[in-house]
Image 1 (tube, helix red, strand yellow):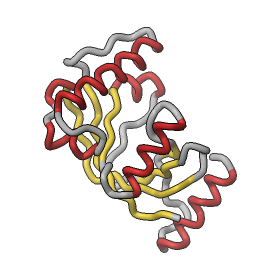
Image 2 (tube, rainbow, N blue to C red):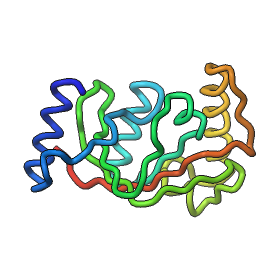
Image 3 (cartoon, rainbow, N blue to C red):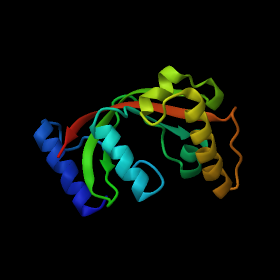
Image 4 (cartoon, one colour):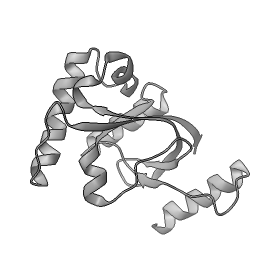
Length: 152
C-alpha cells in the first residue's frame, strides 16, 4: 500500500475507533479513466452511487477474493488520492442478463435497464477481450452494494 494511502487508512482507523489490524480490502478508483473516476466518485459522495458491478473473470484472473459484507475499501479520486472509505453490505453473484433495474439503478449511472445493459455489456466485453476472454449476457458478474462510512 502506498504511503499516502496507508496514512489515510491509519487516520480512518483512528477516527473510527477501529483496531489497528482492521483489514483494508483494497484501494481503487472506479471506472477505466480519470474522467470516469472523477464522475463516479462524485456520484458516490452525493449518495447516488451505492453499488458497483464487476465481471467474475476479473476476480479470477487476478486471484482477488470477491468482496464480502463488511469489507472496507478506500475509494481513490482521479489523481490516486484517497477520498472516502466504503463498507460492502451486500454481494450478489448472478448472470449479467438476470440483473434487473431495481439492482442496477443503485449504480446511479443509468436511467433505465436497457441503458445499463448496453453500457455495461460493452465495458465487460472490452475488458474480457483485452484478457483474451469472451463476455456474454450469460457471463456471471458480482454486484456489490456499499455505503460511504468515512470521508475526508
